[in-house]
Image (tube, rainbow, N blue to C red; front, side):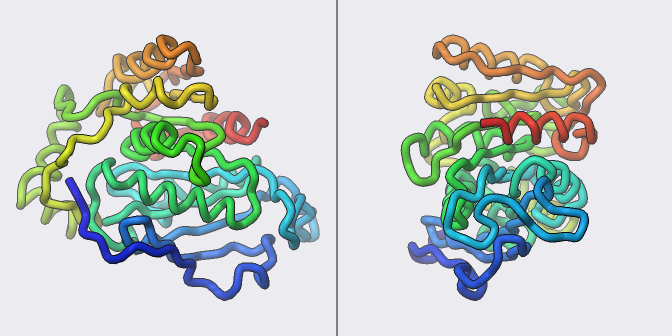
Amino acid sequence: MSSEAEGRFHMVDVSSLTSVPRRATLRTVLRTDDGVRIEAVYEPSTASVTDTGAYTGVGADSDTDAGTAVVLAHGFTGSADRPAVRRAAQAFRRHAAVVSFSFRGHGRSGGRSTVGDREVLDLSAAVRWARELGHARVVTVGFSMGGSVVLRHAALEKGTDARADAVAAVSAPARWYYRGTPSMRRVHWVVTRPVGRLVGRYGLGTRIDRKEWDPVPLAPFEAVPLIAPTPLLVVHGDRDPYFPLDHPRMLAEAAEMAGSPAELWLERGMGHAENAAGDELLDRLGNWLARP
């Protein structure tokens, strides 16, 4: 799948960031390297907010290191404003600042979804923005499709200004074209059939590119060995209706074979992605992401 380019440049549709205190929430529009407009939201950590509401974190109103920022990548048909994504963002804010955004074809972002391919460019734009805001340490966490994107992004952007300093993939597939569950067969129907794409657009609020992948992007399990030595966490529920447990185990094995074992959390009773992530899990995730 591919998405049409609109020109290469990067912008932030807010007033001068240097005049905006970092205690404020910022809603912006970014441009990806292939020219797609991406909506993004920055929210400072609440860990250093006093009872009076004054933000006392490092770099609150300066250009110094503002600590860790978590960039949150949602699942297919999600967006920055979906309740489950907002709940996760608020949980992570107790540990670090949070950048949430809508992938192309989702929410208020432009373009069309390529279901995990060119979405790496969307994540890269969000990570760069977090660094522009003064965060020296930027980590990524992705759910489902977003989980596959953070894995590929960590491999492809390692060593660049869009790099991730730690990566957590939740409910992510290990390989492409999986149709082994009824839930995934429904997803493939939505993505590959004209009527399905209409359902995606008008029923699920997701605009899907009709073009097939060309070339087929690096599979998540193929990306994992390239991530090392960046810290990697794989999280998966044992009741996931989309991807069974052989997917997270395949990812963990790929990391182990690369000589940099991933942490693997198999969550008892958990279903799929951000909608199934409980408060306790989100708090543990936030703690893992924020630790240096």
